[in-house]
Image 1 (cartoon, rainbow, N blue to C red):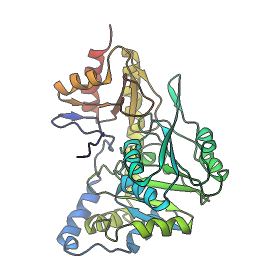
Image 2 (cartoon, rainbow, N blue to C red; image 1 turned 180 degrees about the vertical axis):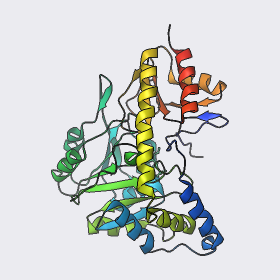
Image 3 (cartoon, rainbow, N blue to C red; image 1 turned 60 degrees about the vertical axis):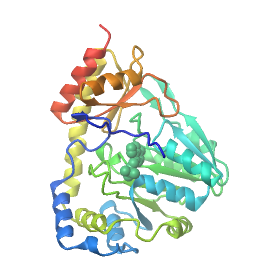
Image 4 (cartoon, protein in one colour; image 1 turned 90 degrees about the vertical axis):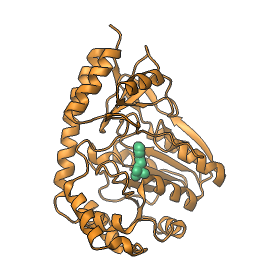
Length: 349
Ligand SMILES: Cc1ncc(COP(=O)(O)O)c(C=O)c1O
């Protein structure tokens, strides 16, 4: 059976191993789900054309051209690999999706290469230029901004410039799953056809079970290729119904703004206490922080945390990270207090 290497610690009373919005799902979205359920939308096949959902996404994110709803960024990535059949996939690593890409490429016949971000000071420097320069015709470059697990943010204009200079047939996929809990959804104005945006609502709405996200492209050929490999009912009717309503609800922008503002405050509080305790805390633009702790391995720290009912994410499974990195999500104040106290107790005197 396929083993998933992701966050989520069973039995943890405080689980900061997954990177969901600490404020939880918006109540309006849960009410919309209940309404959709009462209307019995789950008794019907989902709309395969998804016109209502597509229009709601375009209007909320101010996009034109092609939007293809996907069952989370994870499905979006698989659809892109299957549709575009890249010769090579080059990731700006460490990043989310490395394991999934390697699994898929072993079947699809692509090779996988990692351009490793350089660790310097309190940042992992995302070198988009190096990623772009390594891409040949027919290659696919993958990066996320803010990045998981480092929290590093890449200026959107820099990604556009890099994509514009790519050789014919190469594309960059920019995963923006954490953008709305940090600097904001970046896309404004022209997106070159060689840049594909992969966005997810999982993290910003704290709804991993709904499987909601989308691919945005200005290339008709990419949109057609993705649609041709997408199974017609990839987004369940309950998800389509509730997410369409949420995107048109008028309250969502305020909810996301309040979430990002809480995250920024709480991340600073966590970061400064952990820095004082002796951890190296990487600068993050997302709702989690990456820690370096040379005195203890990530595995050992994870086991000790779990014994205390706390979930953290050992980060040694990401390409380019050694044995001494752990990712911790921003939680609610009482969760932060418990996790920080635990981490302080594990720091050298
Ligand atoms: C950068 C990034 N993109 C996407 C995802 C997964 O999103 P989804 O639930 O939409 O598949 C994750 C999950 O950890 C992630 O870190």
